Amino acid sequence: MESTTMILLVSVISLSISILFPFLFGLQHHLFGNKNKSSAAGPLPPGNTGWPLVGESLHFLWAGWKGHPEKFVLDRVAKYSSSVFRTHLVGEKAAVLSGASGNKFLFSNENKLVRAWFPSGIDKIFPSSTRSSSEEEGIKLRRMLHTFLKTEALRRYIGKMDRMAQKHFEEGWENKNEVVVLPLAKDYTFQLACRLFASVEDPQQVDRLSKPFNLLASSLFAIPIDLPGTPFNKGIKASKIVRQELLSIIKQRKIDLAEGKASPTQDILSHMLLTSDENGKFMQEFDIADKILGLLIGGRDSASVACTFIVKYLAELPHIYDGVYDEQMEILKSKAPGDSLNWEDLQKMKYSWNVACEVMRLATPVPGTFREAIADFSYKGYSIPKGFKLYWSATATHKNPEIFPEPEKFDPSRFQGAGPAPYTFVPFGGGPRMCPGLEYARFEILVFMHHLVKRFKFEKMIPNDGKFVVDPMPIPVKGLPIRLIPHEN
Image (cartoon, rainbow, N blue to C red; front, side):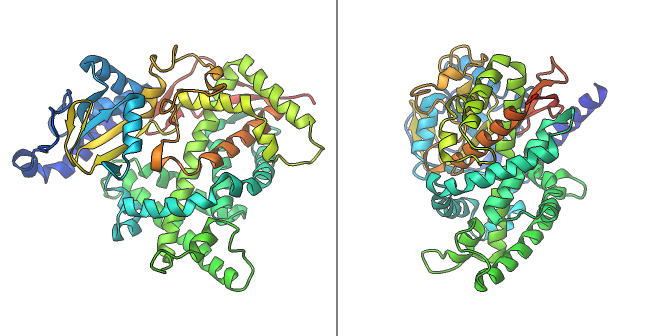
């Protein structure tokens, strides 16, 4: 307990330093410069900017550390009797737009009134983006991914996903009495991402990529202080290691494409190497490495969180497990021995997907993200100045009792038929920035559930421990250790 308290104290102190450090240099501008006066009509939203310079960042993060990130938003919505309020987060003046109407406004005005915003430290992890901007690079990547990650294009990967899941469970789960779910789920999603994005299947090569990956992935959300020994500094070093490995893969792929040993359509890497922009220019190897790096991070973390919490809720709720098991067994009975899962099988997994959606409502893999106002505008009678950061919270929408009655109750029937109203269930975002990997994530989650329940029942080894933290994604404090009970047949 003391060690946990000490870690938390150090985190709080470090966070304070990280927020104060860059802003001490800008204090003169903060005090005497532009006060974000807006040409839009109306007052600023109600709110509190919190402590000088630090703002309300500690309250914001504390809610996540306690496992309830939605409280930061919902408490203030109730306090100000307003679905939009003003605050000060991660060193920036900000407004929070909550609820379905806030989600709709932000998603509908992407690149019109608002645009994606990322902390400046991202450009140190992905340095190629400094040659243009993270926003521009993101737009290019999304255009490239759209065709490749469409449902029609992904269908041919379902059989491969199934065979890889088969191997994953044989090697990581079978013949074991106890396992810790989170690291296994990360292995599963990372192996699939390596195969889909770059056709990397060699276990040693996957291992070389994965070893520095934990440091790299966590550094994206670490305190942006680049000093020796800090998580951020370790992450920058890890990104260089992963990037060098990716560059060697890219160089070999160019040779294989030239010699006809690789297919132009076999994966996203080939697609990037052979696709030019509107000016006829091809991407540089370094830039491609950064794009693949980002895809591996996205393909690994969000889905692994979803898979982990699916196991948690299935272990806690036997009647939900039984419903998933019965559905999966019906699919298994319809197939010949050795047949892989296919598109038609996944389409039959309606109850399983409803369960997965309810899991993502209660433990949303990405609790929320930031936007930046690129023009003055009014929202619900309040003025939002250009330059303000805007935060939208998926968890605050998912846990709002006015939208989802009894929000803490696990109820997959919420997703039957037409399902929740538009802009109320947003684990994959929405609008132009909706996650392009939505269908890919659905496929890999359903394949995971199939292989899990057809092999095992399971129980939590710490029955009453439901603790998880959000930092920045929800994760079980102890990684979710479970006891496996193989089916007799």
